[in-house]
Structure formats: C-alpha cells, structure tokens
Amino acid sequence: MLKQAAHATYQTARWIKNDLPRLWKHEQRVSLKPRSKPKGQVLLAFEPEFYKRSKADQSFRAHTRHWEFIEVANIFLELGYAVDVIHWQNKGFMPSKKYDFFFDTRFTMERIAPLLGPDCVKVYYGQTAHIHFHNAAEHRRLLELKDRRGAVLMTYRAEMPNRALEHADCATVLGNGFTLETYRYANKPLYPIRNSVAQTYPWPEQKDFDACRHNFLWFASDGMVHKGLDLMLEAFAAMPEYQLTICGPVEKEREFVEAYHQELYQTPNIHLVGWTDVSSPKFVEVANRCAALVYPSCSEGQAGAVITCMHAGLIPIMSYESGVDSQDFGTILKTCSIEEIQTEVGRIAALPGAELERRSRRAWEFAQANHTQERFTTDYRAFIVALVEGRLETELDHQARSLSHQQPCPQSDGCVQTVRQPAPT
Image 1 (tube, rainbow, N blue to C red):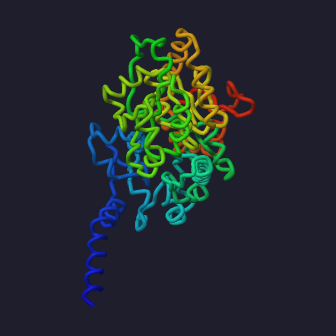
Image 2 (image 1 turned 180 degrees about the vertical axis):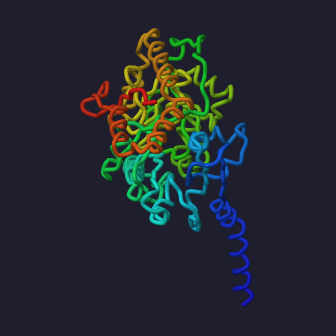
C-alpha cells in the first residue's frame, strides 16, 4: 500500500514538473487590438508566448518563425483587425465570437475549423514540406545509415501528421517549387512565401577566396541525420585535403555522437564548433574562413540555415529538398550521396578565386533581394490583402504560379528548380 502511495506521489510530482508547464504553455492566449474600432476578428493558432516578449529578446534569433508569427498579426492590426492568438497545440479553446480569418500551423485546424462557420476563411500556414514527406525522408535516411554504418538511431525530427490543409480554404507555404509540390495533392490554392532571416551581414570585402577554397561549412539546427551531417562526416573523413567546420547542436544527440565519435573528435580535418549564434562574431569569423556551405538535408520548407549562410557570402551546395533557389551561383545535389558530396566539394574547390568570389557575391545579392524580413512582410501583406479584398479564388493560385515557375536545375539531368519572380504588391 505504501509503495502504491509513493508511486502515485512520484507520478503526480513528475506531472507537475514536466506536463503542467507544457499544458499551461499550450493554454495561453493573447488578444491584440488595432488603434481604431476593429473592422473584423482574426484567430491565429501560433505561439502566444512570443507576443509578450520584447523584440530584443534572444529567442527571436533562435528561429525565424517567432518573428514571422508576430509580423502576420501586425499586418492584420495595421489593416484594422483585432487578433486573438492561441497555441497551435491548444486542445481546449472554443471560439466564442465570429472570426473572419483563422490561421493554423499544425494541429488546431481540424478541431476548430468546423466550429467557425463557412464565412470564416481558414488558412494553413505551412512551414515545412508536407509532414508525410518530411517523416518519410528522415526514415529513409535512417534506414540508409543502418545499412551503411550498422548503427540504429532514433528519429529526431519526425512529427505527428496533421490534416490542417484538408480543413483549410488555402495555404501559405514557406518554400519554393519543391515545397509546393508536396502540397499539390489537396487541390487547394497555395501561396509561396519567401522565408526571412534573423540576421543579415554586409558583403565581406576582405575575404580571401583563394585562401578559403578548401574550407567548407555544415551549419544547421537539431536533427543531424535529417540535415545530412552523417553524410558530411563520412565524405570529409575520406578527403583529408579539405576542411569541414561544423556549427550546430551536435552534442545534444548522444546516439549520433556515439556513432560518429571518431569523425567528430579524432579526424584532423573535421572541426566541431557546436551551436553558434548567428549574430555573434564567431559565426562571421567561421563564414569568412569558408568558401561554401554544404547542406544535404532530406526535407525542409525553405532552409533558414542555407539562407543565413548565403547572407554571409557562402556558396550553397544543397539538396533540392532544402527548398532554396540557387540560380547560377550554387549547386543542387541530385542524390546527396557521399560520392556526390565529395565530387561537388572538389569541383567548387577547383574553381578560380575570381569565380568563387562571383558566386559568393551572387548568393549574397540573391539573399539580400529575396530573403529578408522586409521581403517576408511584402509577400505576406500581399496575401492578406488578397484575402481581405475577396480575391482568394480568382487571384491566389495565379499569383502562386507566377511566383514559382520551373526550369531545369544547373548540373541536373531532370530535377527541377524553382525560380521566383517578385511578389505582387
């Protein structure tokens, strides 16, 4: 009896410590009012905690979505709408007023959409490739790792699937043609939005491209196998003439560290820096030492890591599934095999210094023109104005098609690359 009581006490304490804060976080709500009498009501299922923080908070550099979520609300406020924000994992919210628009990024759409009535326009805010594609791509990488290396690692970036798009009227998608294609099955209007960055940089005038031609960077957040670090380690361990610097929270993933301990800590040409703040001098220093970013991710919406590195003047060598356009400056990997990574690294390193500088400058200019907070605001404001003015069915998908037409990739035998035109304003 005492053992049962002690176990019950332990379980209660564990719930209070671990689950209660999460439940409280998911039940938070924020209400925002425009300066004048509201012309309508908007419900956002995003992350309400960030609407209470100062814009100087360090967390806004952790992921671009935090700022972007706030900017969506700001656009509606400027247009005269009141905005309520709930968490995208909220399981108890019941609408008590009439909403004109409802946006969700994951799990509340299927539950709440039927309660809002046919006059409410429901929008899925897509941040990733479709989650079935996303999950399958990671599992495929883990299976290949098992067969290649004999190591069984757990999924790290897999998510519970959602049916938000099925219950929405339309969707905005952070990404390009690749990302959009993973959502086409639903036959809903899709509007591509160019991802922003938390940090931009001036052009590195003093960079010595001849000196850095053999230096490459892998930069990403968590999910080492998902982001292709296993492939990078195996590729560079066999290429001692090239240097690989790793910026990312690698040591959080103990199973991965155990599987690749030798490459991470005992291979002279591989250098583990760890997680690196993009606003820090350390990140700029690393970027200025490297010629290119190599990013063989298996699935993204539009990879913020790639865009950030392009802003820092790095040439992108990336998977098609990274969701970022390369035009004439970068390389799209067809298969992301170890052999292909080695070939492309060698090809970039062999380019003349002047060509490396040209590609770097073009990547920087492309990022400056297409991937800033100002560009995100322009794109998203155009979308919201189309909704408010009732042009959803007549104009939205036309805009999406004009923003992303396809042409063959450079160095490709058949994959497609999305090339964006300026967003309508």
